[in-house]
Amino acid sequence: MWISDVTLVLPDRVMAHASLRIADGMIAEIAERPVSGGITGTDLTVYPGFIDMHGDMIELELEPRARVDFPMDVALASLDARLAAAGVTTAYAAVSFSRGARDGERRSYGHTSQVIRQIHAMRNTCRVDHRIHARFDITFDNAVGVLEQLLDDGQVDLVSLMDHTPGQGQYRNLEVHVKNKAAHHGISETEARQMVANAIAVRSRPQEILMGNIRSVSRMCAEHGVSLASHDDDTVAKAHLMADMGARIAEFPVTIEAAEAAAGKGLMTAMGAPNAMRGQSYSGNLSARDLHAAGLLHILASDYHPGAILAAVRALAPNDPDGLAGAVRLASANPARALGMSDRGELVVGKRADLFIADAQGRVALTLCAGDVVHSNGTVELTASRTLAFA
Image (cartoon, rainbow, N blue to C red; front, side, top):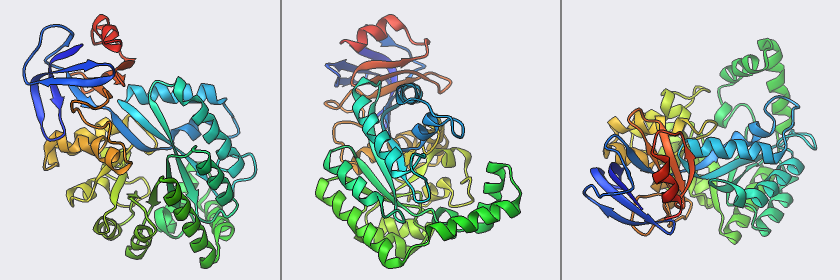
């Protein structure tokens, strides 16, 4: 089935009045001309499906308000639909093992391991391709064994190492962190300051323990062939350490110096799409646009809002050396390469038909995952799209 007379965002250029044929869930042919039949529309743009390596949304879907728990089938179905409507065709659900969480709470090792197993069991019933991104707090000694078992069982696809102890990393500016805490919880800054002090006390661990946890997780990832990412690198030394430990991706570097050090060691840097869309970090750290301008931004992730990815791509495109094609690679071909997925991420013959069609207003009108229609907003001819799903 053809998608004809549209603009195609190819890996290296944008092709107008072009056509793309899908067969058996794959991209079968690309033509630099309109072709009769199928979906047509000169005001439509076809993008490769986005590959989101870090999305925190499942935790919020499971607990939309404090102490309000939703069942996994409701939470995952809701998130799945949101991702498809944002043009995301491969999504890594970021779930956290975090020190300080009590047993049964979100981010406790018991709750998180259960969530991982539930998502893994339900992934074949979803619209998009769901993967698991386990965020491991290096201060959380008890979770090392749980993570090892999950890796042994093939339940985890990506691991990132984080330390959210206030005073370093993402929260290195304590005054900004206190103000954000006060606003988030609706409390005074005095109360927030005490909350931050308590967090520092709970999370503080001897350096040899932290290094032991890092080495253990690094070894396990290497043994299982699972990609490892660093998180919130704020110094050159930390970036070098994580590279030496086998990290392939530097998530959300906090300073330009740390990003330069990570890139110099061959890591791909990832930033949040909301940051790039807004032009600033909500926590006052490095701007994704500044990192992009320096030529050091390689990957865009949804972080906490999948709808921000396309908006961020469009915001970065005018200043990207390769224009729209270059900006789109940040959310498609680049994360595919970083995560070792050679079968997707580009509009290329022989790759999976993971793609979406955007209308003239930049809205995601139709999304296909492996050739099947997984989202439609009704603005593209549905008769053609239903045929397309079974071509």
